[in-house]
Length: 228
Image 1 (cartoon, rainbow, N blue to C red):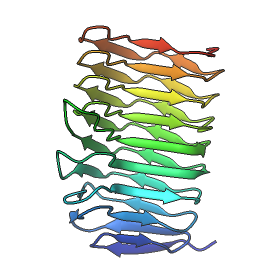
Image 2 (image 1 turned 30 degrees about the vertical axis):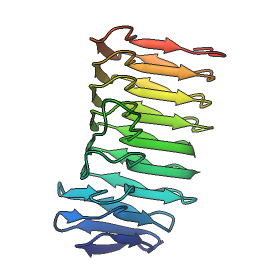
Image 3 (image 1 turned 60 degrees about the vertical axis):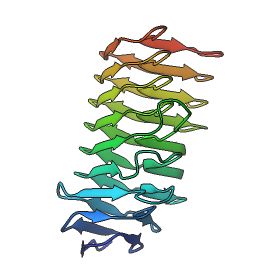
Image 4 (image 1 turned 90 degrees about the vertical axis):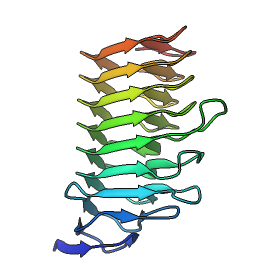
């Protein structure tokens, strides 16, 4: 099928199937910036910045029910440091997408649960999260989350840093057959884990470099029902 190149200079819906959207300048959003609403959509930020959630809860880039998205070369920054439940990239109910070569940072409260995630996949299968630089600094801010049948995903060659209580590098819940390979993960803060697997099976963990510096911080934690 034909591939369309679309230059974009503002946040909004990415709704042209088979389009490659190319960001030509840095953009700002009070809440959510980009919403992917078609299959086979690519967003290449060309190194420009997406500053999201400057006023209200939202996401840098999100897609719900669409497949074959590709997000690359973006710098994604959470604008309001006291925001909660705001994600850099949030993909739901789809498959076969790629998140590559992005710089994403989230922040939030250190005293109450912020739950701001850099990359969150929910029921999203057969995807790749590769060569990203991810930084989180709020309580329960996770760098990468695989949730509820986000199976057969390859997470590799990412640089991950967390620095608050209950902040995990990679968190997988009820998601199986995933490959976690050659990631460099450092966590700081009490109960901050490098890789946390819960109710998952048949995962492959290979050549990850993990360091933890907080009390009760584990490099790899296997929760209930795990076969790895």
